[in-house]
Length: 281
Image (cartoon, rainbow, N blue to C red):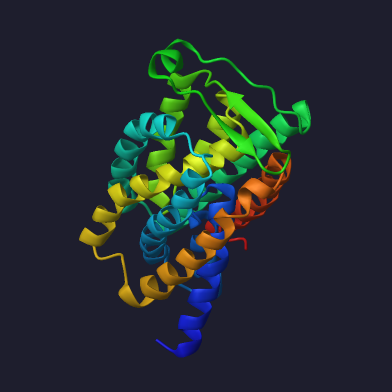
């Protein structure tokens, strides 16, 4: 492995870690395609490096989010019950799937997430409307609140349709284990759109969750030898630095700005992955 290769791996992961922490995605949605297209890393090895980097992203960002009281820990632990089970399932499925199929599935999941959030943004503009806890959320006290530094307001919210979000979290877990991503591309829209969780709280809670989700599937990737140390080393180092810096920026940005960034980036990468999987691009 050349010094240039290590440098590019570090720079790619620096960007991916920052973007992942800022948007609650874990960084895998950026890291996997960049490793594939820029450095020519095979899909399974890219997913293996990404799944370990996602753990690093979560570890670096979660501390800042918890310190600023953006993270809804009770909601995160509730959803993690389904996500972890899905992650282990997806990791085993990954080794029975072809690389082109994985790329197409990856791209479709990103386009779904961006399209869903775009529809929600167009319907309600930048105005967020709080929801009440449903019966399950009320019993488990899943609602939360935080101080928004961008607006100077104290935000309180409930969690609606929590059983539906739990089911979607299982699917997010499968996607995480299957593709080497944190699952935030699915969990963040589910919490925000279905549950009425504010974007900043959804991002912070997703970051809290993705490390646990990734750890569950990482064991399977390590067991099958898809975590190359020469790729994973600089990737984890860069991810830690990028995630730590970006996590401190989130509470200073408007929720609508974060959501718009989320939509644009996911849509572009999703189209790219589908076309590559189909042998077109």
